[in-house]
Amino acid sequence: MATNLAASRIAERKLRDRQARRAQIISAARRIAELEGWPNVTVRRLSDEISYSQPVLYAHFGSREGIIAAVAIEGFQELGLALEKARKRVKRGSTVESVASAYLEFAASSPALYEVMFLLSLSVRFDDPATPPELRFAFSQLMELFPGQRSKSEVLSELFWASLHGIAELTRTKRFPRSRQKQRVRALVELFKFPKR
Image (cartoon, rainbow, N blue to C red; front, side, top):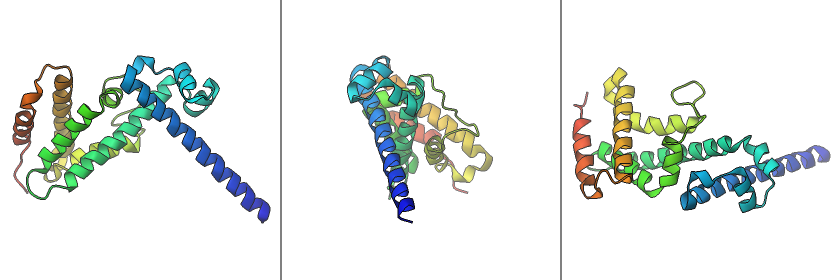
């Protein structure tokens, strides 16, 4: 009995250590990307940054692409939580506008994270049985905006997402001036207003 308990504690500690190493690798990748860009996020650079051997990083993620995918998945969880918070905190006013503003704020405040989520080539699948739950969670926050639209809810959510992504990217690349961001959001919200059913 004592041997089983000791083995269980050792296994739990090993799992915690593994999860902590994984989180440290993801955090370092994000930090390097924010400061220097994604091309500088290499297994060698991460290994030097966090003082783990390259084989340790490969054991956790398999490849650089695995690390990048893990960062993106973490980003989708954060985006989903930001959108959920924006959707639930609305007392008066438009839920759609609150979510749109939260999405654009997320994109502007975390440019490297947003880039890995939407602009870099990822092995992560979208709209597929293998889609990670974090992506489904983020998208579900958009679908919650159009509950009375039945079969059109998914398509409306995709179009709303595409519009927000376009605004985020055109603003980031300075094609859209930030000075008209509130006007763009209000106009977008008007386009996505539907009568209550």
